[in-house]
Length: 393
Ligand SMILES: *Cc1c(COP(=O)(O)O)cnc(C)c1O
Image (cartoon, rainbow, N blue to C red; front, side, top):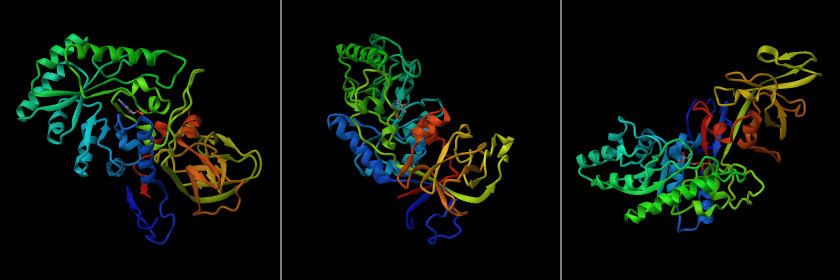
């Protein structure tokens, strides 16, 4: 780890000496990020642009480092959620095009112009607003228009003719992309995605009849790429989760096999603070929710819900300790978690356990942790807080 770049808390008692100098940390493989990006590009072929989605601090992986690695591997576009996230990338020197997915708030617009961010407009009335801003800036600005094909979230529901009229009234902006977003792309037991695709393509055809042909038509995130739903690819795809090495499982009898092979890029470690032997009947942790059934050995590890360990993992989560999956016992505390290491009795204070990742031939990933916690791999990864030092390897 010596020489690796880190971000986040830097307090380090033994700089350059220890292999594991933090209470808890994540290691992010920037090479694996770039390899996952390549794997996606290989599936969709060069005729489809790949726009990695790096919102939510690159799903907890660190947006500047991830974006820099993606651009070095040839990414021409990145997507973020807010103008603030886009400005962070510009201030870090990222030159790629940046699409802002969900932020055309009144106080964000000036910064979007100033930092050359491309907004997604989701309301036809906003076209005129963006047009005036670009006119004042003495430029023709790009935008992507989002249409709501059935998610009932962001996106206009206006008809093609009204969209064409709004576009014609705005000479200082250019419709560069038309996009929509799926509600349940992994669910092959429902026809909802096909209906959304049909709705979107019908709108695109309606615009084309009036000679409105945006350069990019886009619908797909990770799932339609991973399961080769090619009708959803059009000219650009917007994968987020696959960049970080995850693909949600498809459901339904007609679900096709996965065509995309990506690997998780993040490993999460935590140090053992203390070990103790516990007699039968001891009630472990806050509120005594775990009662030791037999003599056991426990380890107190230096990560809790303030680091992003989901509190729902109380008495049901696992970590890897000494190369074995071992159970979490008792409640998750703010800074501490207790695990049963009876199966790995040689461990000592100062040793390290794996919260996410592989060790000794066993592994636990964010998908599994999310299932144990009754949440998703997305929220587990995004939930790793800033207190956890990121180490880039
Ligand atoms: C988050 C997001 C994506 C990426 O989705 P993944 O499932 O992570 O690939 C794509 N498009 C939009 C509009 C999003 O909000």
